[in-house]
Image 1 (cartoon, rainbow, N blue to C red):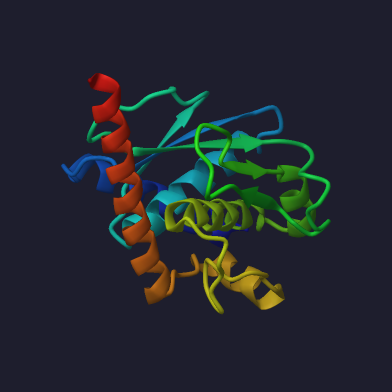
Image 2 (image 1 turned 90 degrees about the vertical axis):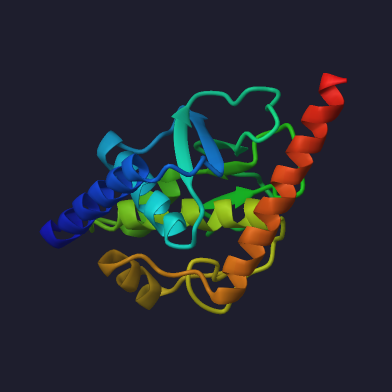
Length: 202
């Protein structure tokens, strides 16, 4: 547990330092709401880990609590609404920890149930690492605008015991294909947001 807490502390410090030094604009702003949020320390550590994971592939994330706005100015970051809830949709597998809506606009894009994540983590200290990877995975779907999965890493369809063990030591990685899809999708989302903003200002 001490080892996991040390890694989390290092990632938090790295994320904060990177944001302080990096003059580049934010790429993605994630708004978080819900009545079933994880404990504060788990939530904060997971967000920092996800921020670090995306910073490694050149995508800058920022987190906000609450509801995202209804409109965005040209050049603003892509905005994603994330909601924590007690139950997921009835048509999903009982093993599902979250789901994303990568093809929709103007509604909750990512839904997560922390109760299931806590159950998977059991009595171990892996809840923070699992939550971080669930968030990174679903954000990946939104940015890629696809429900597709990779054979390994963050975007793998189903993690197994060895994957959970590995992510408890250090964050899993995106494949090179995932990175390309994320950057291509992000550019497309930014272009769409700019187009909508231009039309709204006419």
